[in-house]
Image 1 (cartoon, rainbow, N blue to C red):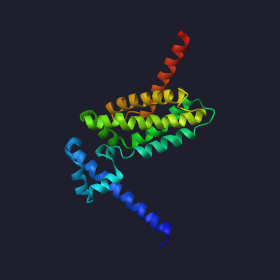
Image 2: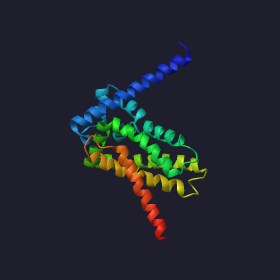
Image 3: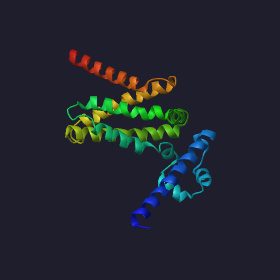
Length: 206
C-alpha cells in the first residue's frame, strides 16, 4: 500500500468516526433533549473514548454545529466567485442567497438546532459566542480581500459583514417560524432590499 493510499484510508476512517459521533449525538439530543445528554453517553453509544471525542469536538455544542466549517467554506468560495466589479453588499446578497439553498435542503437540521437554541441557554450562548463571530470573521475576511483593505484599519469590511449577518439572522428567524414552503431566498432578497432602501433614505435626509 502506497503512502498516498494509506493517508487516504486514514482520512476516511477519521471522517467515519466524526460522522458517527455527530449521528449518535443528534439522535440522543432528539430523543432526550440537549441538556439531558452527556458526553459520556455519546462516546459510549459511539463506542469511542472521551479522548477521541475531544480530538474532533471541543464540546457537545460543537457537535450540534458540526457543519459550520463546511458551510463557511462554501460562503467564502461563493463571495470570491462574484464579479470583481460588484459592490460588496451586492456580492454578499447574491453569495448568501446561494448558501441559503443549504438551509432549505437541510431544513430539519436547522429547525432542530434553532429549537434547541430557544430552549437551552448552553446552545444559545455557544451560538452567540462561537458561531456568530466565526461567520462575522469569515465575511469580514472576504470583504476586506475584495476591497483590498485591512479590516484592522478600515471600518467597511466588518461593518458590511455585520450588516449581512443581521439580515441573515432576521431571515432565519422568519423562515423558521414560517411554513415549510416559505421561500428563504425571497426572504433574503427582501431583507437586503430593506437595507438598501434604508440606506437611500438616510442619504436623502443627510
